[in-house]
Amino acid sequence: METFNRSAVALQKNLLTLRQQRDRSRAMGDDQRAEDLQRMIARIEAALATLQGAFEPPTLQ
Image (cartoon, rainbow, N blue to C red):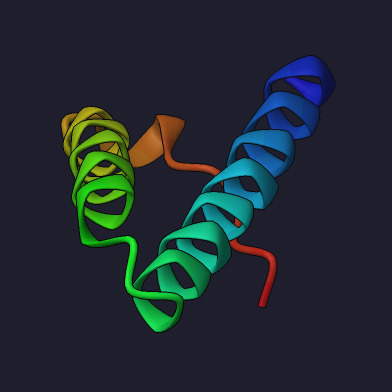
């Protein structure tokens, strides 16, 4: 289970990085890159949403 938690935290950190990159891209006017990043984020979040309660990782917060 520890490996799962480590992987889950790493995934959350990657999601945070993707969101930051998306926001920076939008701020710089690179809307196409921001949209691409948003699609990646949405796919990852959709996959996480399908996890059942016992498999949901603790959040970074």
